[in-house]
Image (cartoon, rainbow, N blue to C red; front, side, top):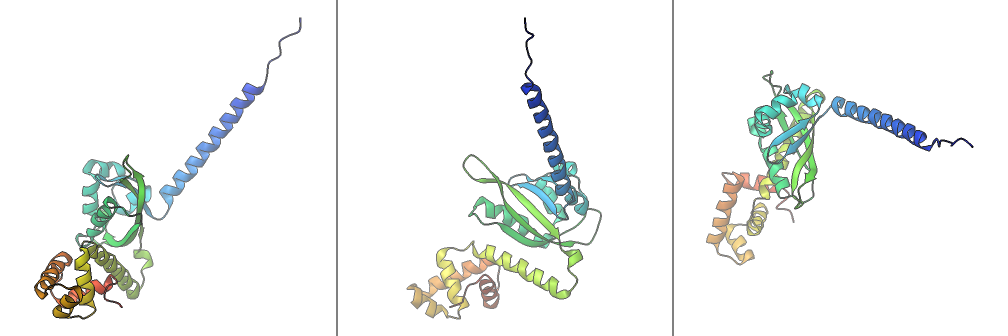
Length: 238
C-alpha cells in the first residue's frame, strides 16, 4: 500500500504569513521612528478633551510627557504652554472645526517649555482626523513647527506676526452677520453713515447700530481700527 503523501502548501503558507508579519513589524517600527524623530510637534487633539496623543518631539520641545498631559487634561495643557495673547489659536481651531467647512486651519503662536521662561514661535496646521457617526469632526491631526531657530531676522518675525494677525482678523470677521459684513465693507470703502444708509436702503440709525455691534464683536474702539481689521480680512476693495 502506497504511503500517503503530505502536501507542502500549508507549511509554505505559514512561512509566507510569518514573512509578511515580519515585514509589517519592520514597517511599523520604521514609521514609528519617523513620527517620533521628525523635527515637528505632531499630536492628536480631541475637540472636547484637547490633546490626547503626541510624538516624542512634542514631549521634548515642551517638556511634558504624554502621561503628564493626560493626567492634567489636554485642554489645561494647551492653556499652560501657549502664550496668553495667543490662546485664541487653539480656541479658534476648535470653533473652526465645530463648524467644519472642509478647510484646514493654521496659525502662528508662542509656546514654551515647562522649565523655561521664554516663549518660542511656532507655526501650526490642523486638519480633520476623525469624525463621529453624524460626520461631525471629533479629532484633529495637528503639526506645529518651532520657527525660533529659523527666524534670524526682524523681517521674518514681523511677517510671522502679520500672518498671525491676518488669521485672527479673518476669524473675527466670520462672527459678523451678512448685513454687518455689508456695512463693514462700505465703511472700509470710506462711505459715510448717510451714504451707507442710502446704498442699503436702511436708516442712518440702523447703520449706526450695525457699526456699534460690529465694533463690539471685533473689539475695535474707533473707525480707523475698524477699517484696519476689515481691510486685513479683504474687505473694502472694489
